[in-house]
Length: 412
Image (tube, rainbow, N blue to C red; front, side, top):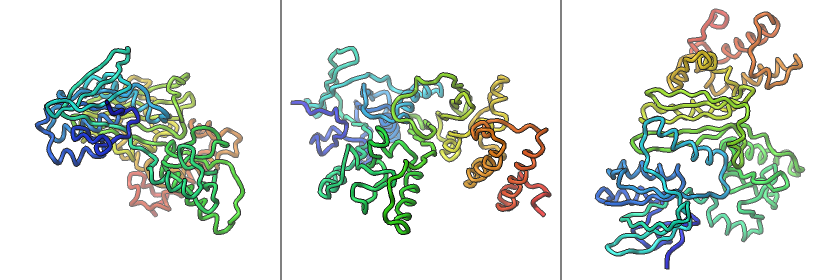
């Protein structure tokens, strides 16, 4: 009888077959030697499958010897994961990266075959039966985000679980002395559906949880409150065969697919020798997402230069939009490494931006409008206000921090 892999959480010990290995166990299997393996089947979502292929290729396995069976459907996928999975193949092709052709399958089962091989049977996208044999099957599954030990511990302590550990807006479980945050936790359904913490920036979730815990020391009996404002974007990166890298960042929010909801959106595309890149702008000019795919790792744009862009207005990127509209879109990876961007990527830039907006909000204009539009030179009061805030910021950081911005107004 076949062993079902539909749950995508089986590992080598669970299957009991030495020819089957899960993605987390792949590095240890590679150390034992896989270079002489004649045929390999990789099964799973596209991002994880590419990671497995890249690891195997780095160990000396020919990518052309691999067959890729792609999971036809995934339950409860975040917008970030879905978007990355849908965009990756086309982005890789645009960047000149050849990936093995994917076959959409479901109902995959594994059986022991003759000659120390493994047999895979599945149902194709058109309902046809698929039978493949290989020396090695790699279950390139996304990691199970909720460890069984957490579920067991929660049940033993009478904590409410709904797929994940349920918490209120202050990150408290149904036991007010126990807090939880992270990929194994979710906000209660009374705030909405599908509010898993994995949807949000993990660093920001941790910071908000820490603030809630610290608040209990001054006010032990905190009442219920609204959900915390989680506004930082999220980033996913995937290693690709051939040494390439795919990176995709998306603004905060996004539970399930809203990829088709692109009315009024604009896409700024850059395709150069350094790779394929695009920025998706909302109608207001806010950068909703940023994607980069490079064929060589040395051309990779570090994540710290990609993630901060999402949620900002494109007007913060100097002349980028003007250049695109003029038909001369720059090489984005190089463009974002120019010296003027050092202020944009400074760890205190968000505070500067917030201070500027708060100073200007007294004009009665919406914050978003202020954030995405330039101030006319004729509006002397606003210009002076912004100028003073920026100069004060530069004084606080010191001339050595931003030498390219050094002017007599603050180096003296």
